[in-house]
Length: 177
Image (cartoon, rainbow, N blue to C red):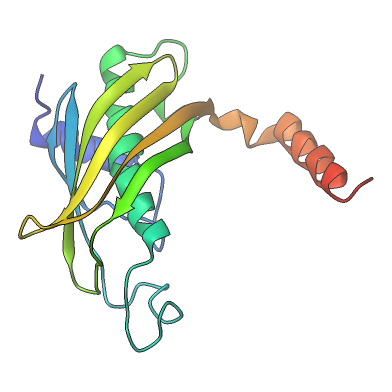
């Protein structure tokens, strides 16, 4: 089932990342097998000032994040919505990025450029999604590609007493205590 413009907008609103760390601007296509989204890198993005000063190039890690926000987060939200995940509202799940494999960078993205991210489902099972992603410029030239995965984790694992205690214990162990 192809998602209509209203549903695509709803999914976009559900993506939890916000400025300055939001790298999905529009969802153009969305169904059970694939997603296509776009993002225009603004010239005032926070990372350009320190990444190759005088020669602004979008960092590769940001390009991977851009593919993940479209291919893993937004696509995963849609697939969960279709599944009608029982017992917990879809907004109560946080998608954590778990894997980037076979990532290749073919070109660079400069300030002001519009990129297109296409993701094709490899699998979606349980609370995990794996997607093959390709990023292109608006002229169709490929910028990067890779296979990305993520896992849905209940939001309350990050909040409340249990989540805070786990963070404290982990911090103490890192300090050798």
